[in-house]
Length: 187
Image (cartoon, rainbow, N blue to C red):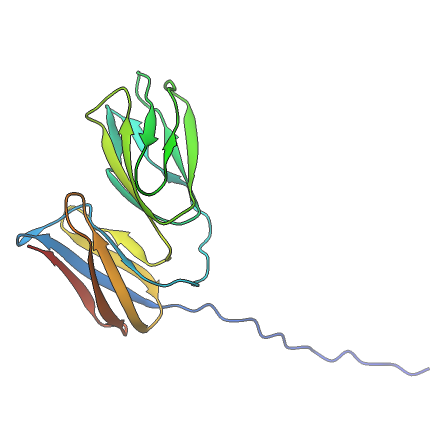
């Protein structure tokens, strides 16, 4: 009887690719600008794990005011006010109408194509928000100091895009090599 030994098998799995952290700032007329969406064009980039994304309705306002998501993301719209709301978007980007619904109810929408969706409430005309759906995993929204961070960007040259409420879209080019920042300026 012959014995066959087991040989160890070495399996090489693809190592995760970690990219650079691209930081930057956004200014309008020389002042820090909150709520600007900045993204890098990167079609064909690997899909990110699904995350729960929410635009809350609270105190007769949408929170956050500006949201950036990757195309294909589901956004939940919970009503946490004591009144009915009717969230809708009728032009550009994703068009939808969630109908009236009371406190405690959440309605989801899949942002399945790129573009800007302007959100309103049919009952409360002062409520407005924006969802920018992008075909890239590399995006961010500027904070109250006008700063943003886009993590995991592989080295390379990218076309960047920037948008803000009330402003023209900006486009340019940036080489990401691990030690650079992106400064976005609107007049």
